[in-house]
Length: 196
Image (cartoon, rainbow, N blue to C red):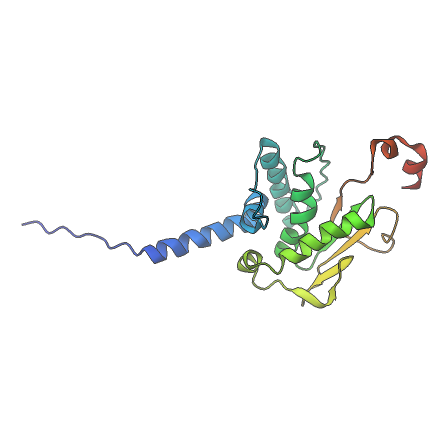
């Protein structure tokens, strides 16, 4: 008589392994990071071809940065297609999770808009999901404002500024210039372009 041996599957271990893999993917992929850390319960995270491609380019830039290569991306996307979500709201926190000793500069045409983006990025650090991905990354006790916030025990920080104020003397490893003109009229104005 042949004896059949059945392997017992420990489903709690399978679940743990799946969660571990999801966390690793969320650290390595900007798209997965956004999905993992998505906070807006009133709206699903929508993924289009453009979303996947931009996040793929960000992933490549992260890998290049690790190798000491600089990357410059110019993103042209119609409004309301997620550009600011991907770049200004989620990228600073993801970047600092991976590179906690580096600096981020976040700039828009107006300080009020920049501060809105910065607040969102800063508040991500306090979420359960972010802490699961980066348990050792915490907001600085001494530097936690909206215009400037840092990482406790590290050199990393975000500086948020309007285009015409607060940039002098600040360096960055990741520079984000989002919505640098308030309107088409401003974009076509020689006076405004000369002053920026």
